[in-house]
Every structure is written in C-alpha cells, then in structure tokens.
Image (cartoon, rainbow, N blue to C red; front, side, top):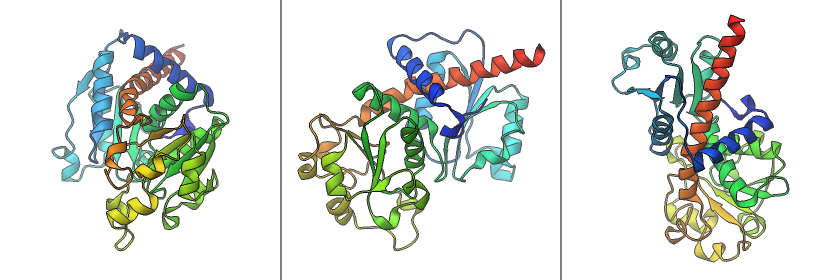
Length: 302
C-alpha cells in the first residue's frame, strides 16, 4: 500500500484519515508491532521531514537514519536500488521527497515496502493536502459549499494540485488567483480563475502559496514589493475578508511577499495550526499504510 497522490485515496479513505488524526490529537496509542521507517529527503525540508519524524516517534516506530548527502545515490546509485536496499534490510515504510515529478513511477509495482510521497517536484504532496483538509474541517465541519481560493504560484505548486483534486472531490468550490502567467491549464479545469481582490471578499479559505523562485525560468519573477502589492495579502485586503474566513499557507512563508508580516500570526491565520495538525495526519497516514500492509500479507498467506 502506497500513498503517492490523492488519487490513491477514496473520499472515504480521506475522511477516515481525518477521523484517525482527530483521535491522535486527543490521545496517542502506539502501534504495537515493531516496524521500521526511513525518510528519504532529496530536497530541503523543515516541516514535512520533522513532522514525519515526530509522527514516527510518537507511534513508536523505529526510524532508520538516512542522509541523502552521504548516501550512495551520490555515487550514481539509482533511486530504485536505494529503495530496494532499504527494503532488503527490513524497512517497512519509506517517506520520500524528490525533485523529479512522479519519481515514484519507477518504484510502484517493483518494491514491496510502503511508500508515502513527501512531495515530488511540481507534482503532488498528499500529506500537506491531508493536514490542510484537517485544518479546514476543524473550522467548518464540512467541505461541501465552501469557497476555497488557492493563490499565487499555481503552476509550480504540488500543494495546489493535491488540494484542488481533493477539495473538488469533497464538494468544495475551488478557485485560483495570482499572476495569470503562473496559472496551470490542467488545474484550471478544477476551478475558475478569479481576480485576487475579488477572491479576498468571497472566500471562506484563502490558501496562499509560496513563490517558488527556485523553479522559475529567468525573468519570470516579480520584485518582492511588486508581488506583495499585486497578489499579497496586505493588511488592507485582510480587513475585507469575510468575518469567519481563515488564512492558510503551507510554509515556509516569504513574509512581506505572500502575506504581510503582521498577518502571519493574526487571529484568522491557521498557519501554525496546520503544522500542528501535520503531525497527527502523518501519524494517521503511517498507521493506514501499515495496517493495509498487514492485511495484504494475511490475504497472501490465506
């Protein structure tokens, strides 16, 4: 059992994971059997990597140390051989972040350990999506009828893709805003483009995205002050948001670019709440894939 994209989960699976994450928020029950996990992060990460490590430790998993900078992949070993090595020595679940879109295509069906995608290039980020869903659900108790606007660097965002897929399936109205040159045709099939100043006034959730300068071709970026004036959540724009609307961001936040510095921790901001929820969601994901793994083993034996 893998969780590579949100398409690997049914709507029932998603709601089950949110329910389990809510249980873990109240009390933590360790997984009784001894499992081994490894975190293979080939891109920089603070929140996702630390959150998975915290989730694994809270569940009582044995976490194998892995450093991409000192691994044999630096000698030319393929990702497949690296993962097969970990499988051969007894790793049960690997969390992998990689800069290549759909890196997991070379692994799916060829490895027996479970894989949780910690982010692939500009492709997918299921654990971020699920923690966002948990945060929204805590606020509104349902998704149907909500208007959620994803704002900013849409084309380069795996967060935008995963969230748009899941939210639309769950009945929310998804909209996109930001520089039109940074929109993505495939994603716009899931929701309409809306002027940002209009989006501020009609959205239940404003989901701001980091400007991913490292993924832009030369000449595509804005100056910080220019971007903030055109597409950033300024103090003036925040005052026009509906009373019960919330502000989200997957972080890291470019303060003063996507969001005014003083709004990052304002009353309607759920940015650090998202990080807290990330631990519980990732605990639920780990339990989910390990339980599915055990069930498949028993089916094979029987």
